[in-house]
Structure formats: structure tokens, C-alpha cells
Image (cartoon, rainbow, N blue to C red; front, side, top):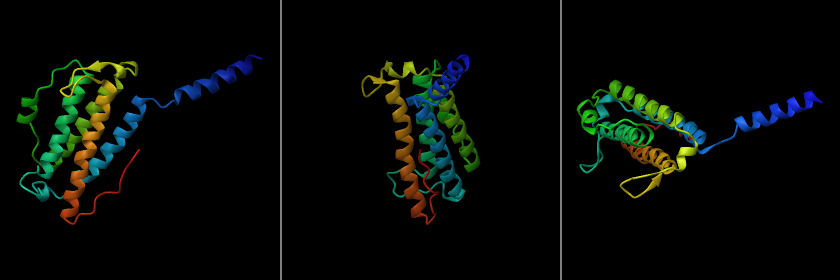
Length: 171
């Protein structure tokens, strides 16, 4: 009889440990998003990092830096106790392709670390945001949505330069 209880416990524990939560779903998607964006950054030749389709749009390099800045701002402000220093970030922006790719990796890793350290329960916490009160879960959605938005622009940049974008990476 003890073995049956142990077996039932192990089955239910295994099922619970594989539960998909908003946080675990975000973290899985975040890693895939990182891989996809890094492939795009790699495939664009360094001499094309200054390419912009029009004068109104950021060039390829500044699109990547903008993505990083937004990730670090949102994750620092809403998922840490640190102060976000926009000026320091701007003053220390990387310039070469290899430096930008390292910065991308570091930025994705920072978000991942901060979200990992955030409790699942705190995702319902409302925070002050310029667009009105939002939950931390909404901030997570914004983090991913913002990367996706600018990544879509980068796909166009690649295509305009006759560079085949990497194969889509989803969930």
C-alpha cells in the first residue's frame, strides 16, 4: 500500500513540476526570441549595420540598440530594485557588430535572470506605467511584443538588402 501512495505522489509531483505557468511560458519564448534575433544580427554584414530604408527610420544597428535599451529599461524598472540609467546606457553603447551581438546576448540574459528571480505570484502586481497602471505580466508581454515589433522591421531590412532572413523561430 505504501508503494501505491509513493507512486501516486511521484506521478502528481511530476505533473505539477511540468505545469506551464505565465512565467515559464515567457522564459521559453524569450530564449527562442533571443536565438532568432541573434541569427538576424549575425546574418547582416557589418557594413550594412548603417542601412536604413528611409531617413525617418533607425538604421539596423540602432534598431538593435533600441531593442536592448527597451529590454534593460523594462526589466530593471519593473523586475529589479536597481535604478535604470538611460544616459549611462547611451554613453556606453557598443559600435561594432561583434560588440552589439555581445550586448544583445547580455541584455537578453539580464531580462531572463530578472524574470527568473520574480515570483509567479508577483506577476499580478500592478505597477505605474506611462500608459497607466499595468500588471507585471503585462510588462512581460510588452517586453516580448517590443522585440517582435522591431525584429519584424529588421526582417524587412534584410530583405531589402537581398539577404535571406533566418528561418522563423516561434515558441
